[in-house]
Length: 253
Image 1 (cartoon, helix red, strand yellow):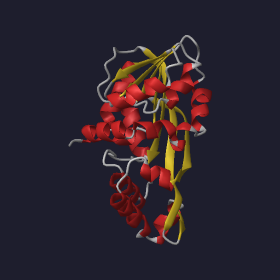
Image 2 (image 1 turned 180 degrees about the vertical axis):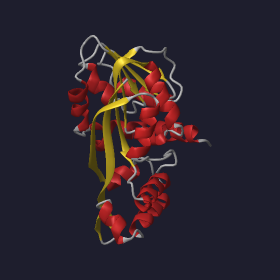
Image 3 (image 1 turned 120 degrees about the horizontal axis):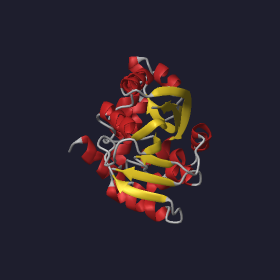
């Protein structure tokens, strides 16, 4: 099974969990998206890998049309059902690395907490730049890898054990190089620690108790510097929460 097939399997199986996920539905960056973009009712927006549709929903009151895309048909259908009252959101099955749109047609492109699943980030950013109008804005949010390689390896391994559709969380420097190569200029950026409720995070993609225990044991075996960097809250052998790095950036074509 290739990575994109794994993505489809994971998100079709867990489509409802991504609607209700507190990490996806309730974070303050949803408000920041519209604050940073300053959208208007004449604009057309594209939300790539919309998942539970949280960004599309946030943008819908501020723009003319939101086109919400996702690789997984079952996820998109479920999201459309939940957001049926938002009449200016349309839905399109689409691969982020091969968007089915003409050049230079969107005023805004967004992608939130999804790109770590994409196997070809250069191609994805190329597609973003291609469909974006001149002077259009691209707002991107994703989990990022720390600069220290040991921490990078730990978090990417952890994510892969927990979710086989995970490809790689990349460093900010990696993303900046890719953005620059597609002539996207950074206007604004923010890095933060994002707190994750552990059991909800785990159960969103792992149902089997034996597989859950593998994730638990990987964390419990981590050295102290790893535990400190990712701010694990562990009571004896019970993991309550931890923090990962997240980057939010707004670019202009």
